[in-house]
Image 1 (cartoon, rainbow, N blue to C red):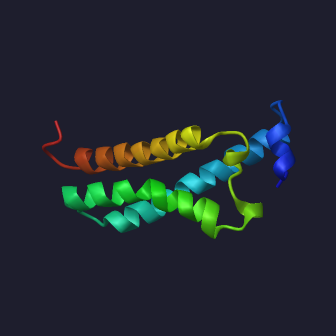
Image 2: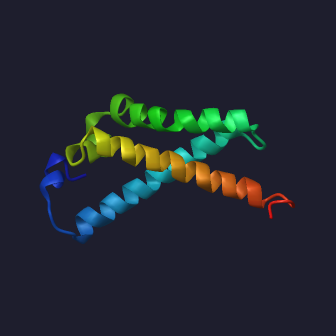
Length: 111
């Protein structure tokens, strides 16, 4: 929405912050829908591990290779490769933790 210039904007304001928050929240829900669909209703631990391991690389490729530059998240303008790896790693861990908790706590013997 604000182009590459947004990377140089050093303050917090409604236009930039709300846009960033909304687009990142939307992206998180977008990936959560695909992640849960790929897992299925009752995945084995092997399927859970495989789908979870694929989430980071697949989402990074879609975000930065398959998506037109104008629509990419833009994090690469601020963060280096190491930080980008951390960001996508956090996405994977968050999805896995949330999905695992929901599946575990939905069982009677979750205790």
